[in-house]
Length: 447
Image (cartoon, rainbow, N blue to C red):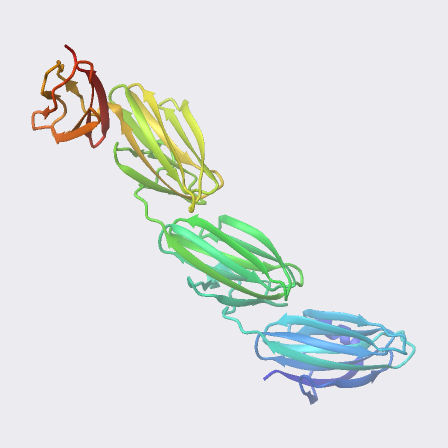
C-alpha cells in the first residue's frame, strides 16, 4: 500500500546536502495518503516526508501556504528531483500549487522548505495522493536486449514516468506483410515513436503531440519483410504520461524470387505467367530479365497497390533506358497500366520500384514472337468452308456475318469451318490463340 512518513525538521543547508548526496534519511512518524498535513516553518527550516509508492502511479501534491518563498521538492530514492515548485504569498491570501508526476514504484522524499531570508513564519498545508496507473508493460524494457514482445491484435498499456524515459517493444513478423501500428498517447507533451529492424536500421520515426485529456493518435502501416523489429516510445523533458499501443500484421503472399535487387540478380521472366511482388521499406526495387530470340512486341499489364505511386522502367543490356512511367494506386483503388514495346533480339530488364513507398504489385507479360502462326486459305464466292493451318491445339475463331464459330486446331495444326454460302466481298475475321497470346487476321471473299 502506498504510504507517507514524516521525518521532521532540518535546515535548508542540510536538505541541499541530502539532495546532492542522495543519502537516506530515516522517518519517525507515519502520514496517511490523501489526508491534509499542516505545519509552520521559520526561515531556513524544512519539513521532510517519506512516501512509498507500490504501483505505477500518478503522484499529486496539493500545497498551499502563507510563506514568502516556500519551496516544495520531491525526489526519488536515487536523489533525482522529480518535482519542484516555489510558492509565494503576500501573507494575507494563501498561495496554492498542485504538482503531479507519473512515477514508478519506490521510495520518495517530499520536502517543504522556507527560504533562508524569509521574514515571517510560513504556515502551510499539503495533501499527497497517488492514483494507480494500470499498465501492461513489463519493466525493465529500456533496450533491445530486454524489449517486451508485443503481441498482435492486442492493446498494450504503458507509462513513461519520471524514471522511465522510454519503452522498447519487440515485434516479430513471421512473414512478409503489412505491419500496422495504432498508438494513442496521453503524455503531457511530445512523444517520439520509432521503428527499427534487428540491425538498428531506422524504418521510420515520428513525433506525436498530446495532452492527458486530449490524446495524440498515431496510425501508420508499413510493408516489412519477415524478421524482428523494435518499436520505441520515448518522451521529451518531463512530459510524462500514459499510452496504448496495438499492432497487426497482414501477410502478403507473392511469387517473386528474392533477392532480385539489381540486374545481376534479376529474375528470369516467363511470358504469359502472372507475377506478384512486394516492395518494402528496405527493398525499393525489383528487377526482372527478359530474353528475346528474335524481334518481338512485348506487352506488359501492370497493377499496383502501392500508395501513392511506383515506377516501371525498361532498360537494355547496356543499361540504356527504353521506357519509364510512374503509376498511381492504392490498396482500395489499385492502379493499372497496359502498354507494349517493339524490341529487337536481345536481353532486357524490367524494373519496378519506389524510393519512398511500400506495397505490392502484380503484372503479366506476353511477346508476339510466341503467338501462333496463322495461315488462311483463300475463300471464293459460293464456298461453304474456311480452312487453313496454325499451331496445333490452338483455339481458332472465325467470325462471318456477325456469327462466330470456334474450334481447336488438330495435331497437325489444320482447321476447317463450315460456313453459309460465301458472298463476294464478305469480310471474314479469323484468330488463333495459344497460352502466350492471340493473332488476328482478316480476309475478303473473292470471285
